[in-house]
Amino acid sequence: MKRINYKSNFDFIAKLTATNANGESVEVGFPDYDFELIITSGCNGYSTRSFVASSIGGATKNCFNDNGQLHIVCDNHKLNVGELFGEFKAYLPNDIYPDGTQLNVEPQSLRIELVVGASDTPTTAEIELQLPYIYQSAYDLAVASGYEGSMEDYLRLSAELPEAVETAKLVKLSADSLANSASSLSESATKVSEGANTIKECADALQENVDKVSESASAVEQASESLDATKQAFEMLSSEWTDGRQAIATALTNRRYPTEPTESFHSMADKITNMSYEEGWFAKIGYTDENDGGIKEAIDYSYELAKAWKPDESTRLIFRGNKKLVFAPWVDTRELIKTNSMYEGCDALVAVPTLDFPKATNCSRLFMDCKYLLKAFPLVNGIITNFNYTFHSCLLLNSVFLDFSNALYATFIFQGCSSLTYIYISNLGKSTLATYDFSGASVWGTGGEENRQSLINSLITYSYDRASNGMATATIKLSATTKALLTEEEIAQITNKGFTIS
Amino acid sequence: MIQEEIKVRVLIPSKGYMLTQAFEVGITNRVVSDKVYLAVTDEPSNWKEITQEEADAIKAEQERLANEQLKNEE
Image 1: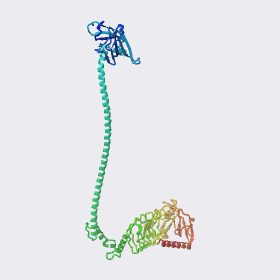
Image 2: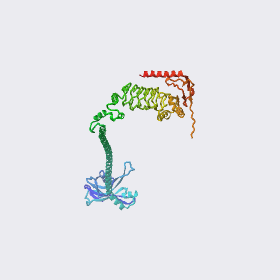
Image 3: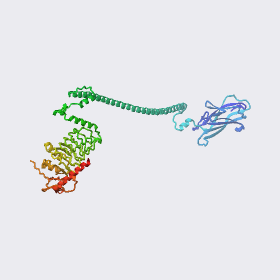
Image 4: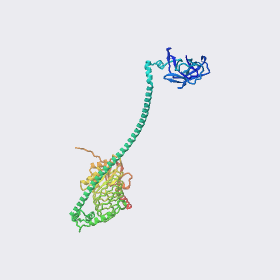
């Protein structure tokens, strides 16, 4: 028992011991749980004064951790004289208790007596205190949980554990940092991807522009080629122009009208207009400028009439009844639909040039009373419907070419054509016209085999087969002279096609 | 050697008569003839005999109508 004057402050080390699972007493050291040591003095520990040393929530009071041991410091303790008792309260963590804490209490003598007299040698006493629980060390707990290493290994590992924890914390920090970096990197990658898409869009737009430029370049190249072609054509025309002028000048000069290639076309045209008949066709039979038989006058007259012609139908009758017209001029008849009576009564008319009648449907009386007309131009557009009196009284007419595909009227078409030996008709019988009176062409087919062949071609070769096409009989009236030219076989061929010959 | 048989039907009026269509036709389409070769699609019944006077009258009427038509078109 250590004696200490009751008025003195004193301290002591409480060597805490506990019994382990093997029943062995082991030293615990500074507790790692909450505790209180209530020191009292007096008989059997009952006193009105107490002194408390504790560690609650890590906050120590009247004690400290002295290198792993519990060092109690009684300062101004006010304890009474007597033996000191200590009630050690251990607040052990235990989940089975509602507050999570199991309170174990162990009262015991501290083997320190407070006296009135002198104290023993003032050294720090070491008092053993028995803890009120079965002690299990961390190693014991680890073994209970399956740890199989030695205590030395456990202790070593435990010693290393803080550092490992610190290292793990650092690793976690690094991992977190890495994760953040990865996240940032992912965001950056997303932005890079978006940027790449933008770049791709720009590249596509650029490619489109490149394509357009390429197309433009191609167009420019084509235009350049076209320009080259135009240039070549121009050079050709220019060459032809020069050559043409030279040719005209040479021709005029050869006809005793000296002409330079550099002369204007108007000058050349005037020379042609006034050209002498001596070099023309009429010179063959002795016509000269001085004795042209009125030919030049007739031609000049025709020329003046031609100037008055208009291609519409307003002037189509300017020749009708003209007794002076000998040589009909060429005029533009391409738009005429009605050509009836165009030359009717031109009883001085000898010749007509070939006119184009692509739209004409009415040729009634076209050449009626053209007594001296030798040849008529073909009427073969295939759409003419009216041939009434077309060649009526053309006394000298010797040949005609006709297409009867749509002929609906042909009354007296050849009446009075006493010289008409050659008639070529295509598609005779194709229309609904049922009666064809060709008896006016009283000498059709005479005067040679060519003329007779025109009869055969018109009635057989190029006529329409009405019988085979289910059409009604058509009657062809021929002159006795023309009828007599046909053989029996030819008559049979004609009748077999659905034509009655009368 | 080729032998062919040609058949042509011919109508010849009695002496002093002419032939014309037996059915009604416009005067401009009426034919008056002294011999008719029938088409394969034609029949003898389509033709009849008329006297020469009747034939002349028809021709005269045709010319009259033609002249009238000419005047009208003028």
